[in-house]
Image 1: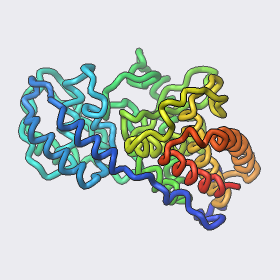
Image 2: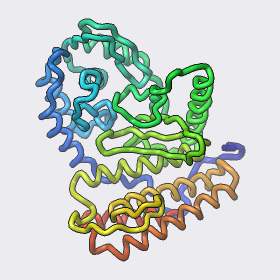
Image 3: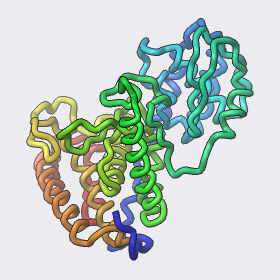
Image 4: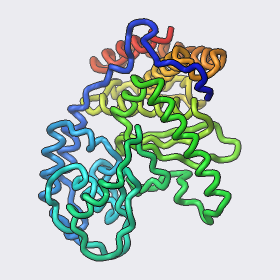
Length: 357
C-alpha cells in the first residue's frame, strides 16, 4: 500500500454507510440469558453468582466490552478448555469493572490474557482484583487488539499460529513480517479511513492472524458464537482491511439476527453464491450481499483517500460491484422469502450499495 499523497476520506456521495449499525439490544438480552445459565468450573472456586450478576448488569447497559471473544465461555458453552475459558471470563470481567470478584484457584499454569498480551500464571490462588490491576497496566492504544496466539478465546480453530510445531526461527520471522503488515494496515486505516475503522471497531475488537497455506487464496472467518473477533490470513495491506470490513459486516448481521431471522426459516432453496462455489441458502446470499456492499464502500473511500494506485482500487470496486449486483438480483427476486426485518435489512444494504455506484 502506498500512502504517498493520501488524504483524509470524505463522503463521496452524501450517504455515510459507516453510520448504519443494526441494533445490538437483542444480542445483549441473549448474553444476559446465557450468563444466567453459566456455571464456572467448581475447581476454580469462583463466585459464579456474583460474576453472573456483574455480566447481567453490564449487558443491560449494552457495555461494549462484552462484545468480545473473552465472553465465549457463555456464548459458546462447550466443555473443551473449560477451566481456561471460565477463568478468562472472570479475568475479563475484573479488567472491565470495579467489582471485587474474589479469588480464582488454578490447579495448573494458565495464561491470563489481556489486550496488552497478558501473563502466565502458576498454579495457586489468584486475587482477581490485583490481577486485573496488573493487566490493565499492559494495555496500549492500538486501534484493534492483535492476538496472534488466539489466547483470548482458547477454542480450537484451523491454521492457528499456536498450533505450529516446531515453531522455529523461520516461522517466527514469517509471523513478525505478517504482524508488521497488519499494523501498517491498521495505522493507514486509522489515519485515512477513520469512519470505516470506527465502524469496524464497533463490532470487532480482536484480530487473530492465521497461517497461510501454500497456494491458498486470502481467507477470513467470524462466528456468531465468538463475538468481536475476526480470523484472517495476511497477504497485503489492502486485503487485510478488506477482510476486517468483510467479517465485521457479518458481525453486524449476526447482531441483527439475534432479534429474529432475516430469512423465513421455511424457505430452503439454494442459490448460486457470488463468493463461494457451492450453492447457498438465501441467508448465505444475504450475508454475501451485505459484506460485498461494505467492501465496495471501503474501496470507494480508499480511492477517495488515495491510499493506493487508482487503477488498482477502481478494479477492486468494479469486481466487488459485479458480485454485489449478482447477489442483489437474487435477493430482490426472492424478497417475499425475507422476513419484515430481513426486508428492512436488505433496503438498508441497498443504500450502502449505492454509495459505491
